[in-house]
Image (cartoon, rainbow over all chains, first blue to last red):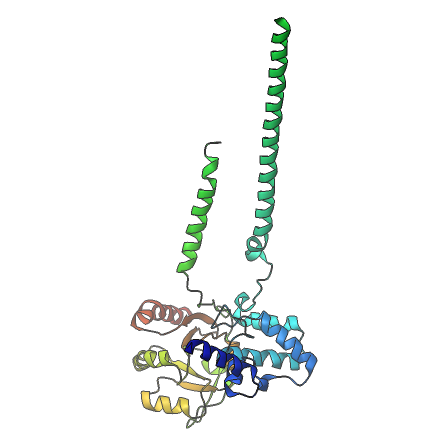
Length: 160
Length: 179
């Protein structure tokens, strides 16, 4: 019961704006917002595509880590300096490598990763078709066998 | 051949199990440095409180040196600190420090209390230089050669065995290389 209550309270604190708990839990805080709404939208988009390097399963949009906050700051700085989205990503990739991108780029060392699902799908499809063909031909053959048998039987009947 | 076919899934499973098993042994928190064999990025940091000189990339030129990123807020740095003091006393290699994201005065007070192993310290309060260096946490240490290129990066605490087995041989090698 107590658990449910604290859960409810926590949910409530998230809903009510201006509550200190709420501001502490939201990662790109209001103080990080850019004035230009278009730039802010691009920044938010980029946050989601960049990985937090201390907490690697999170994007810098999700993370509360101080380094993630610094990286968001850098993204905003680059945007304000007039960089394109691709340039911002290149800038960070230059420093942190491919790891900083949430989506692995298509290149020589990630080709297997990208192609594997299609290869598996293709291989599985081919295997299924081959399997179905052999089943069918086996069935056809048994049909023929049946016909032969019936013919033989009728022949026998004719003899008698 | 046909009789072996039912074992194909098992064989595939075995291959994947070994592959992923080996993958589990790698430490995913260690992101390879992009700086290896590249020139140290330009930076010019202000001094920490109470010191006259800051730290710029040019200060490291012409010698083999260590560049250590620390912070007074960082517990592993406190564990590493005595080892840095020992290296500094031995005089094998100069250590340069970057005080990362410390509030004004905190880094200086911390060095005052624990001793200062650094030839020079720069204050990176905003954490910009840290991002230029691709830092993922403190402590992190770079080995810089005479030409000002990064030759090695160590993530985490330098302890006795890291120093003796990895850093010291590398530093000796680099010092002979240019001499």
